Amino acid sequence: MNAAVRPEIGSAVSAKVEQRVRDSFNRQGLMAHLGATMKEVRHGLVTIRMPFRPELSQQHGYFHAGGTSAIADSAGGYAGFSLFPEDSSVLTVEFKVNLVNPALGDALEAVGKVVKAGRTLTICHLEVFAESAKGRSLVAIGQQTLMCMAGRPDTAA
Amino acid sequence: MNAAVRPEIGSAVSAKVEQRVRDSFNRQGLMAHLGATMKEVRHGLVTIRMPFRPELSQQHGYFHAGGTSAIADSAGGYAGFSLFPEDSSVLTVEFKVNLVNPALGDALEAVGKVVKAGRTLTICHLEVFAESAKGRSLVAIGQQTLMCMAGRPDTAA
Amino acid sequence: MNAAVRPEIGSAVSAKVEQRVRDSFNRQGLMAHLGATMKEVRHGLVTIRMPFRPELSQQHGYFHAGGTSAIADSAGGYAGFSLFPEDSSVLTVEFKVNLVNPALGDALEAVGKVVKAGRTLTICHLEVFAESAKGRSLVAIGQQTLMCMAGRPDTAA
Amino acid sequence: MNAAVRPEIGSAVSAKVEQRVRDSFNRQGLMAHLGATMKEVRHGLVTIRMPFRPELSQQHGYFHAGGTSAIADSAGGYAGFSLFPEDSSVLTVEFKVNLVNPALGDALEAVGKVVKAGRTLTICHLEVFAESAKGRSLVAIGQQTLMCMAGRPDTAA
Image: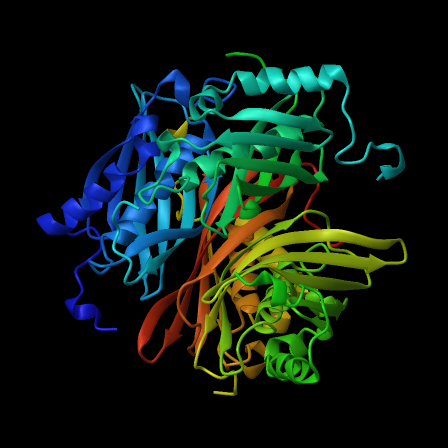
C-alpha cells in the first residue's frame, strides 16, 4: 500500500524483533530435537541450519524429506513472523515442496523469504541448500502460506 | 489399464512385500528419532503413528508441522513403494500439505494412500489425524508425487 | 465446533443459497467462454461440466491443464461459497493440482468438496473426471485454500 | 553435473528450438481461445502475455485464476520443453499456484523458468504479473513439475 515506507525484505531488524523471533524458535521442541539452529533473522527473511546426523536420514542415508521440510517450514514461518505485529502469532496454513536434488551433505540450510505480506495471509518462498566439501547445492524449493493470528501473543501455552 | 487383475488399494499384501516395506522404514533414522512406528502395511496404503512428546512441538506446544509432514511423507512414500517392483526404490518428487486443524493430541496417525500408480510416477493422497481423549480429528491433508527408481534396489547405501 | 447442528457436506441447500451460487458463477466470464456449466450445487459440494472442443486443447489434442484447473478452481470456490454468510465473497488463496491421467474424452467434470470450513479459511478437495464412451476416469486431483471475504457481498464490481 | 558446458537459463536459443517451441504453442487451442500469445522464448525461460477481456473474468471482474493458471502452466511447460531433446514432448505432472494479489490490469504476463532440469523430471518456478497504467505487479507465484516424454515427438495427434 504505502510501499515507500516499508523496510525492504532482507534488511536488518531491530534487536527487539530479533529477540522475539529467536525466543519463539527456541520454544520449538522439534528444532532442538533435529539439531537445527537459527542463523540469520532479517526483515522477512530467516535462515535455519541443520547439520547431518544419522537420526535425520531416510532409507538411503540422505536427509529425510521430513526434516528438510521441517526446517523450510520454520524458516518461512519466522520470516513471516518477523513482519507481524507484536501481539500476534503465526500459523502455517499450507506448504508445498519440490525435492529437486538428493539432500546429501554436511548440513542443510533453509531460507524462508516473504514474497507477499498481507494483513491476514503472508506468502513465502522456501529454498533448502545442502552444504558439502563440493560446495552448496539447491535440494528443495517450496511455497508456503502463513496466517497472522492477531491478538494472540506468541507465548508458551 | 488391466484394472481387473490388479489388487485393490487397501487389500492385503504378501509377507514378503510387508517385510520389504518395514525393512526400508526401519532404515529411516528420522522415523526412529521422532518415535514414529509403522502400523499398517496394505497394498498401496500405509499408516504411521507418532505419539506426542515435547521434542515434537512447535512454539505453542502443538505438534510441529515438520513432524506432521515427515510422517505423512513416509506414509505416502511406503504406500507407493508397496506397489513397486522388487529391484526398485522410491523417491519423493514433491508434496503439499494443508494443516487444517491444530495438531494437538496424544498421537498423530498418518495415512498414505495411492490414488494413481504409474510406471514412473505414483500419486498419493495423504491424511494425518490427531488422536485424543475426545476422539480422532483430521489435522492435515496432502498430495504427493513419488518416483519409482527402477533397477535400484532399496538397500542401505 | 457445534458439528451436530451443521448440515452435512453434500446435503441439499436452500433455493436461496443455490441461486446465490449460480448467480455468482454466471458472472464468471471465463466459465461461459470455456463452455462450462454448473451442474450440482450442494452444501459444500459443487460440480462443473465442460464439454470438449478444440478451443480447450493443448498441443496433443487433450484438454489443456489450464482449462482443467479453471473448472476445478471454480468448483472448489463455489463449494466453499455455498457455506459462506450472505454478505461475503470468496477468493482463491492457492491451489495445487496433480494431472494423473491424460484428459481425453467428451467432457470433463470437476467436483469441488469442502474438507474443512473455517471462519476465514476453507480447504477443499478437488477432483476432475473425464467422461467418454469408455466410462468415467479420474484425470486430476487437487487441494485448494479459499478465503471468505466477510462484509463484501458478492456482486458485480 | 557438468554445468560449465550447459547454456545458462535465460540465454538465447537457436532459431530451430524457438520454432519448435512456438509451433507447439500454436497447436494449443486454449491459448488462442484465451487470446494468449508467446512473447519470449529463451533457454529454460518462456513468457506468455494475455490481454484482459471480459471473457477471462471471474465474478468480480478480475482475471479468473483459471486463466492465470493456464498461461502460467504453458509458460512453465514450454520453458522446460525448450531444454528437451528433439524427439520428445512435455507433460505437466502437477503445479501449485498462490494468488498473491488481485489479478487486475490491462494484461497478464506469465514467466516460466526452469529451476532444475532432469532427464525425466524438470521443475519450474512460475510468476504472473499484471500490467496496468500503475505499473507491473506480481499476482501469482507457482511451482510446477514437468515430465519429458522421450521418443514421443511433439506433433499433432
